Length: 481
Image 1 (spheres, helix red, strand yellow):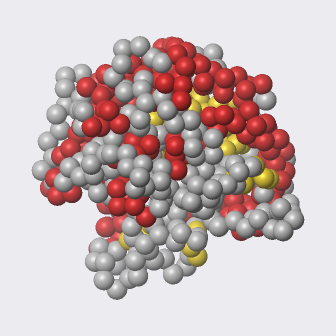
Image 2 (cartoon, rainbow, N blue to C red; image 1 turned 120 degrees about the vertical axis):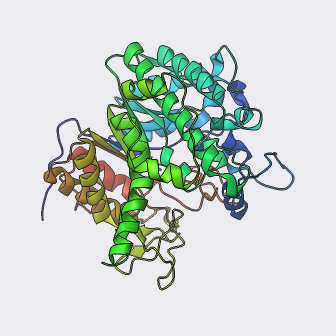
Image 3 (cartoon, rainbow, N blue to C red; image 1 turned 120 degrees about the horizontal axis):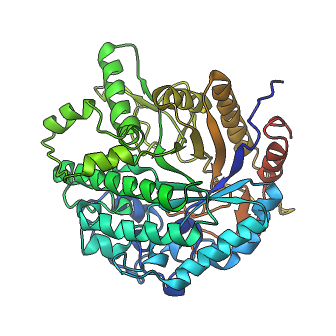
């Protein structure tokens, strides 16, 4: 039985997002964000994938699971105590922009919102847990989308700068680890409402999508520079969704297609945020898609100066691609597309399970960038059953996490520098893609159902005790039962 060596001080923990756990809809002066107007169930997919969606809250037509979520807003002390019992060194969470600036364009922050996160951070520190804070996690202020067009509008950069300065100054003594935009590259396959792109027509998406990316790159650089100036001892990273792209076969056309897809999806945003410049391969892409960026004087210098300290990334699956889509079964569960990989099994939601892909990802990222890496999302969405005795025997989740952590250990032996690992949805939460509660990721069960019923009672799953043992042994007891 092989054991793995994780460095002293390895950052073990769990990860969440404000819009998926907090609830507290309309409380504490909070304004509407994108997630607040996304209903649960199948309708959410249609909205996420419909560029011209008209944002309205149809209380009589839809249910909105994010409005209560798992009520972390009122129950954070209970949840943090459970995280501490598991032995968390860090807890990744996000700040809801609309708790700080309800519409996004105010000049002064909302004190009630600032105070809420003061309380959360203080509670974490009381239990010896360091917060890892995502500044923007799929919850842009709705007003900035409906009135300004989201990130397509240069003015939003100014509003974001005001926001980051407010939170850096407020929490400079409480937060050491920051990340700018969650899964920033997601906009490449879904230029969606959740990212604040607000694209109006699918056929016209290229120009506004990449202009929005440019504005986010400028905003990210501003945030990095501000963080370094206000909190010199802090570390601030970017955050990407990484899914290694495999060629369907050894046909050189498919190999090249997989290479192109990987550069665009996995590397484009990171190249800009880590290397500080637009990569050369994008020149051809921009030309072929008629993209002419409006780059203002000083933008490129700012991007060069505002490079991140580390790469945070999510890893759930790999991708298998072929140039011509005929002759291969579609892997529909992978919302980023691809064809089915015959060597891989899939989750209840069709996401292919590929632990070795995490090792591949870590090696590729470290070989390319030579900066510390942080696996800030990795987990299994599955149906959980509460047994008659009240237990949840989620051995399938333990198996998933174990194999991925082993793959991470192998990558560390390969030479990759890895800061830490935060399992996604350490506590059950609202699924971002489907708005379901039944797609459970947590090691803590929350009694909340897709129809909105439930007591919100927390239960420890079998994986809770397994992960506790893994953290206590610094990864040495991965094969414990």
